[in-house]
Length: 112
Length: 120
Image 1 (cartoon, rainbow over the protein chains, first blue to last red):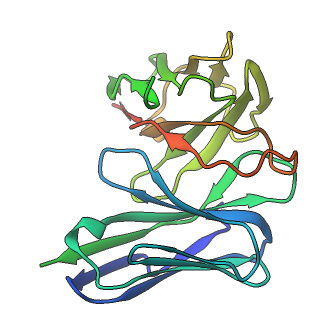
Image 2: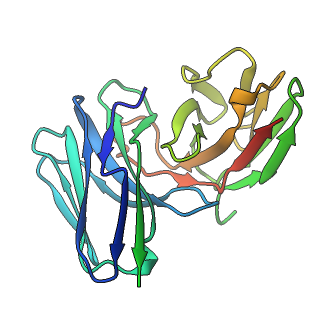
């Protein structure tokens, strides 16, 4: 059972548009990560956020961790075709387990 | 190696056949994880090793699934008597760190490209 819900599930936009992807849970996470996965490949780590309210920027991508550490968002400014992929959030719970809980995924397609 | 290597990339198995999936992690990475990813979904946890010790196997769906990492490096995920519902991409990830909260930080995963298993 996936406890990390991502929205939207699918997003198709044109180059230059802005977008936001959300990752929500009722659970508290000690840290949260965002990954991007391209077809036929494994997910690639984009960022780790660990502090409630933390904001991190990676070029045109802005990541925010919710104050209560239950949710996160990813904002992309001026999307480019190279941003196309499956975006996954992954949370580490406070239960002492090393495994991460992955979200349901957001599939983004950016067209010219 | 430079990255996490998984083999084979693709495997077609007849229902009831046994399969073995290999993962060669990044040299020096203590932690190794196996995840199962259904089409269009996020990865789901199967099992975790710290060096050669299997510390968590709570995600293995049945006793037909077995994983090992005998020398703390290469790992093998074995599925016995494969069923159609086993069809998925099996991802291996390695990480520098141990469990969070032990002062080692939360290291991200480096994933392999996965093995796509199709059971016919």
